[in-house]
Length: 240
Image 1 (cartoon, one colour):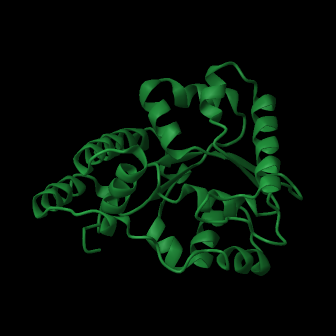
Image 2 (image 1 turned 45 degrees about the vertical axis):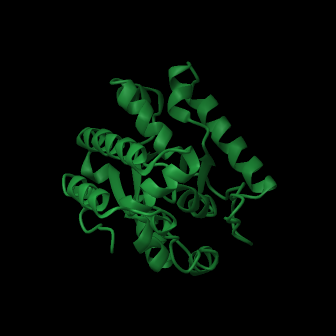
Image 3 (image 1 turned 90 degrees about the horizontal axis):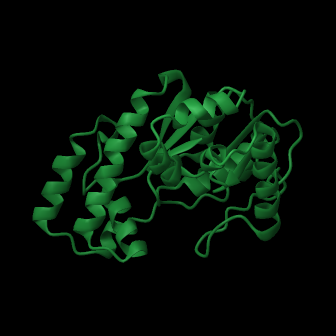
């Protein structure tokens, strides 16, 4: 499962994992919501696999980026050992609204459940949310830090062995190392050709969407004060 913020790079990470021979990661099936709707474990797995196949057939990616990895395993698998759903922001919000959601998840899914939290510079996250949601920076900042509080609460309910934080910037800087660490977390071996193929499609540097907006010094200072409240955002600033 993915938790975290919208517009943080979940789609890239999920698409690269889906290219692994033993891993299927669907794109926004919203498995947690379907569990609440009464879907069985088998039905959930079927939805996830079918989504992965369809996404691969239609081209995995967005209008701006293609996440298709040539000659790998997107939309198919050799031996299915890991299955999941890329629905970071939606899963976070759903967990916040339903206090028994984690319990229901583990009751329905017999497999060990692990969580991936993709983080990105808050200034870029807030800016992208503003651009995509037609909100002001102040409104987007409020939404972003509300999610921070939710994520902090969710993290308290998850064993540290079952949760990994992944920063978008470090992953972009060294995708081979980042993907290897992620597969180690999921207890799946990797091949060199898989890592090289995945690394080849990753853009060279993250887009700094904070530069698309005019941030006042007052708002920068206020945002950096809020960042300091959350340990998992340690090291992020407007300049970094």
